[in-house]
Image (cartoon, rainbow, N blue to C red; front, side, top):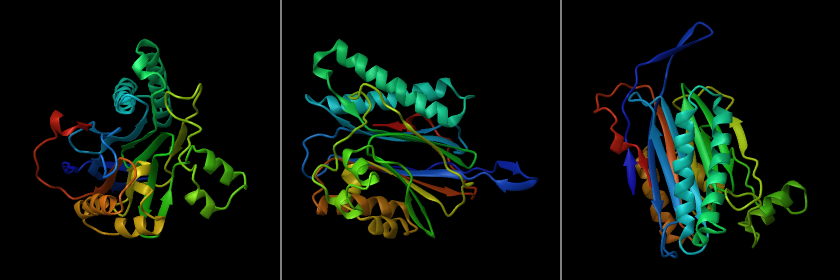
Amino acid sequence: MKFFFSKSVTATTNTSSVREATLRCMVHFLSETGPTRSHNEDSILTYFFNESATDILCMVADGMGGHNAGEVASKLTCDTVLAEVKKQQSAHQETILADALLKAHQEIIKAGKENSAYQGMGTTGTVVRIKNNQLFLGHVGDSRLYHWSPSGIEQLTQDHTLVNQMYQQGEITLQERDTHSMKNVLIQAIGTAQQIVPQQLCFANTLTKEDKFLLCSDGLYDVFSETQLHDLLSMKDSVLIIEAFKTIGYNRKAQDNFSAILITFTDEHLEMAPITKEQNIMS
């Protein structure tokens, strides 16, 4: 398990002549093989673009494929997305993230053509950029992004699965969707489909200290109900939340690798060492 505690920020931004503190992002995360798998095909990325922690990139990728190629696909996707976002700092954030996922799609297909062991490998990809109190999303697959606030919890991503498509078309109920034997069959994944259309989203509200965001693979959310996720995210101690995810995931014998990134916010000023290259984690 890994944790990251970021530096404070005192920067401000003006909106409609009102002076608002720019929030400092704090990130805690885990990525576990789990009790039933032999190796971990998930990859996670957390990257801080500045020492004030007002500009971050976070991503969860859940790989799939034979001959241990799943972790190759998920890591290649994280590497590619980070490189593409770094190259396109001035572009519109929603477009950057979607374009970066499309680039990763091309890179995985290319790797499969060059190495037979990688043919058919693929991955989900759920990536967020938080910059100056705004959140942007790019998403393919069935990893998820949840938003928590005191008023409730909301899933911001659409599951790109056959069963969710059936639910949206009115063919099955919500309960049937969540318990269906084929609920993890993807209709979109990076590297495996001929064409992908990433979900793009700009979170409509300006972020506050009350907001929390959870990125996670299906191995994590499969062992929790949405009500249970809400209750866990209601706890104030982020370290305890991550510990609870790990403990419950193992106790409930999660059937897959499980990964989570928890993003919270503060406007407090804390004297801490500047962020170093080693504190930008990709695994």
